[in-house]
Image (cartoon, rainbow, N blue to C red):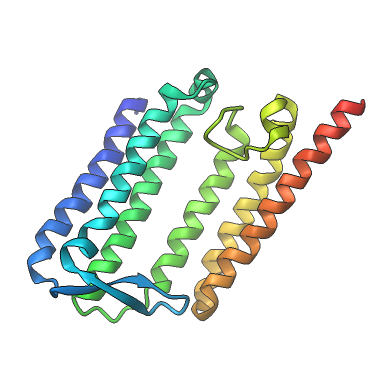
Length: 214
């Protein structure tokens, strides 16, 4: 598939998500819950027209941004070197948002399925794919692990993203296994993610300093 074809798949997923929301809208209560807490329970209420359509609107803005990035990035020529992986990530991101929207709608229609059994695998797959594409990325201003040191050096960028790729793949597996303990979903996602991000920032600085002193 060409880059344009993959991009159309992403737009198609968004359009189907919006269409499904429109079809389900008449059956929704006049006020609906719109947030999940760490245990998978929904809380916070809003008017149905806001609760039903706020995520599709946010998703549209995200999709517009990701569609524009390959054309507006000052280093857009580098993005073309991993464009297929980039576009595939956008498709997966749209699928992720579609899953979350489906959960919001279904829970407000009376479903009793624990959303963590769906959210955790969805996040895990997304993180694993991020780990898969990180080593393939090239220096740019929007996508990847962007620190002052990775942006300044192709070598630091590559080394940091190779390590980041392995760590995010491990993180993806850990999050998927987190379905065994859904009550700790928030900790399973956030604690390893924060540790990885801080570690990669520090690692990029160390590699940069090593190169500078070599």
